[in-house]
Image 1 (cartoon, rainbow, N blue to C red):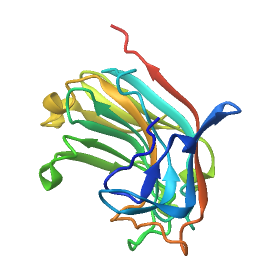
Image 2 (image 1 turned 120 degrees about the horizontal axis):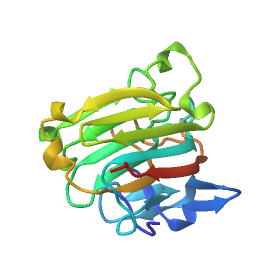
Image 3 (image 1 turned 60 degrees about the vertical axis):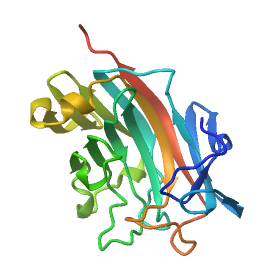
Image 4 (image 1 turned 45 degrees about the vertical axis):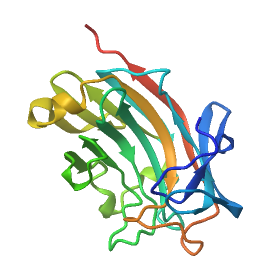
Length: 232
């Protein structure tokens, strides 16, 4: 659990007190503070506490299956800037695998993706516009007013073999990416990957929290995270 620190590109302050394990679930809580935490980089005043947990130095793996069953806090109203994620990062490389990223509403963009989530492969998120990216909307029927991903618990999965990568949602395959079609896969993903679970608050693209559009409390509730090894 990260504690008394912050990320550079959102509006939240990280504290271990925002992570609670009880009744068989882990909750990453987002709470508006009574006074802002002042930090040295990025947005200086942080009005929300949130949590970040990872397995760096404790568990990492290359190939296999990763899955999380969780209920997201990204309802279609009063959650602007709420940004839960389930992702993997290389121990030895800067490759990144975003199994689930979701954004709350209402967004400052012309369309509102609060009922959906995204999956992304990154060559290196430090490269700016030069980075390689494989990006897709995972919940493709969000615009048809089908139940949003925040309506209940759902399972977000990722399968990885030497030949392909595959994203799944509630056991259904959403996309299959042949590794040979990703030109930077050999360098970006040649590493065991550790697990990250966090909930940022605020995005320059989707919107920063605003009391008119962001409620004071919201929970990212995780029922389980499971990892399977690939048979030799």
